[in-house]
Length: 412
Image (cartoon, rainbow, N blue to C red; front, side, top):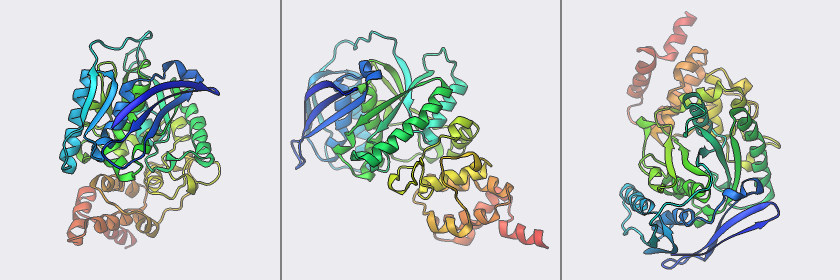
């Protein structure tokens, strides 16, 4: 693979930096990869070779490229980190190929910035992202260098893959997201920086994104804003007990750092329920919450479809916490035992834990039907000795008495 023709241009209130990616060892077309932002932040968007190298390294490994060549100086810390990142991915997924050789000059001095570098995070509007912001505001003094000043809200790297093609429907949805998150940004005292990119065009497969590419793609955007940032946080999906190989992981993301820009994987000590509580107790965030990527399923003007897995998981948690009525960005959802069993299919231990953690809260609200639904979903996920597994869940949360037994006792 060759990365060449790095350039920048300004057009119609936007600034774009781009590079040409030429594949050498696989049958893929030459591509132009870009990062773009509005004129308000144009001075901080740079044609940083780090951005294009970080964006390309994992797709190159995945597709069997033997090398990446870029005629630019690269920080030795980043070069070493990319080798480590490839090592983790090769180990996790047992890839039977050598690491991609990086052919580039080694930078001898750090890049110079004319302004104090700032801390920021990726501002998607979901539970993980908003909890990262809220936790930062509650625990880090505003004067501290790690206090967030800016959030990057990105078009083109939706986890569902819907936004990888630019069209009016998805651009309108992004404009609604920016407008909604601007309310959160104003309340938190941070800048929202809109970014447009097509880095996912290097490989559009959803599983590749989730398993290998997510952290590198996000980090590439941060490097494109190198003059502005000294530290960028990526919100963790899972917490420590539920960590598993993933495209954004605490063992992976920091390896996309350079001497000038540190990439941090944030929030691994918090469960999904912990994060939801942080967001639910922040009125502005709750009233602007956006977790959904299913743009085609959304009702006009809505930020969430209310039907997909992310929407169901989030609204059920808000119901369990007594906050669903205040979450106005979701269409009205009527939960029942059969509705949950029909719609929720679990594939990972982490996802199962997100539902099982809700059981005590649902029980406290008298939603025995939803507790039974989660128990049934868990049995279907785990299979095997279903009676024993029900008893295990019951013992964990209720000291040995099942919800059906308690309900029967209350009737008598």
